[in-house]
Figure 1 (cartoon, one colour):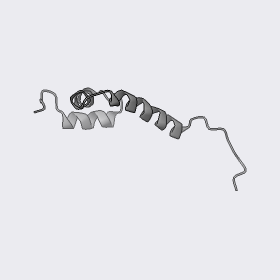
Figure 2 (spheres, helix red, strand yellow):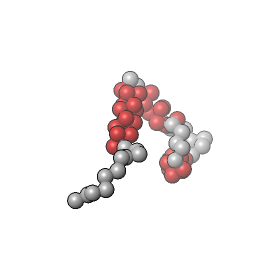
Figure 3 (cartoon, helix red, strand yellow):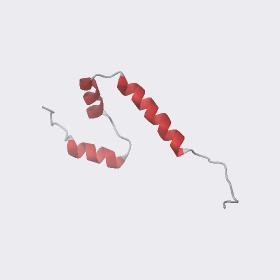
Length: 64
C-alpha cells in the first residue's frame, strides 16, 4: 500500500485532454483543403518534429 500520497503538481492526463479538445475544436470547423494547408504550414517547436517535417516537405518543393 502507498502511504506517501503527494499532491500532483502537473496532471498530464488533464493536460492531454484539454489540448485534444482545443485542437478538435479548431479542426472541426475546417474543410479538408483548409485542414491540409494548416498541417502543411504548421510550425513545430519540437526539434524532432521540425526535422521530420523538413524531410517530408523540403523547402521549394510544391505539393501536387
